[in-house]
Amino acid sequence: MIDRGNGRSEPESAMGRRTLFAGAAVGVAGAVIAAGAGSAAAATTTPPDWYNVKDYGAVGDGTTVDTTAIQDAIDAAGAAGGGVVYFPAGVYAVEPVGSATACLVLNNGTTGYSGVRLVGDSAGASHIKKLTAVTMIVMGGPATDRRTS
Image 1 (cartoon, helix red, strand yellow):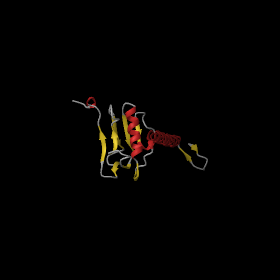
Image 2 (cartoon, helix red, strand yellow):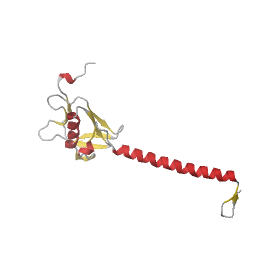
Image 3 (cartoon, one colour):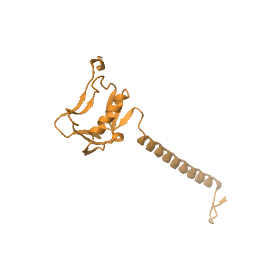
Image 4 (cartoon, helix red, strand yellow):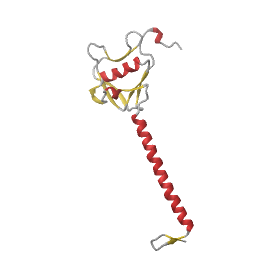
């Protein structure tokens, strides 16, 4: 028997189980905290070949015009030779800038933007909303950019 110091005694085996369960609870709590810290870090880290439109100034509230920020992210991915232009959850409003005939352009005028992909956060979570009645996105490049298979 072990004296617990509160006037109660327990068999030695009960004390062992209690200590084991207390240690297990601390271990599980530590694992949950560590897992939470890992996913929080992952959520705020953008892979090097991903271009988050919010890092370029996009707001994604559906009313702020995000055209320039999105185009800057597209241009950065194109200049790097390709990459993913990532849209976190939100509604991204676009309209033509200056004398442009489209809101967004995936073409630098000479060689195209081979390997640039636009990716949303999840199904139905990311939207591009056009504010005017024009072409939303122009894509293209020379014939060598086209896949034949």
